[in-house]
View 1 (cartoon, rainbow, N blue to C red):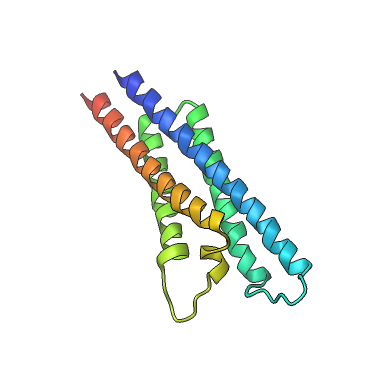
View 2 (cartoon, one colour):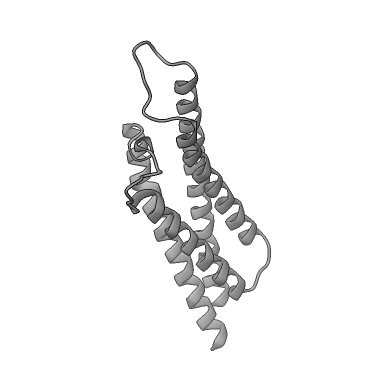
Length: 154
C-alpha cells in the first residue's frame, strides 16, 4: 500500500513538473516576443513597457524551470517520504507567494507591468489554466505525501 501511495505521489509530481516546463516555455516565447517588439518597433507604436518590465517574465520563467527541474530531480532519485513532503511544502509556499506578488499584490507603485497580466488572449488563457493547476497539483502532492507519511507511521 505504501508503494502505491508513493507511486501516485510521484505521478502527480511528474505532471506538475511538465506543467512548470510548458509554462516556462510559454514565458520564453513571450519574452522573445516582447524583446522583439522593443527592439524593432512598428510604425506609430510606443510600447507601455521597457526592458525592466520584461525581466518579470524572465524571473517567472526561471522560477518555473527551477521548479520543474527540482521536482523531476526529486522524483528521479530515491528520497524519503519526509524529504519529499518538506520539499513539496517549500515549493508550494514559494510558488503561492510568487503568484500572490505577481498577480494580486497591489501597491501605489505597481512594479509588475500591465503587460504581465494581459499580454495577449493566449497568455490570459495560459495564466488562467496553468497557475491554478500548478498550485492545485502542488496541494495534491502535499496531500499524497501526508497520506504516505501516515501510512509509514502505522
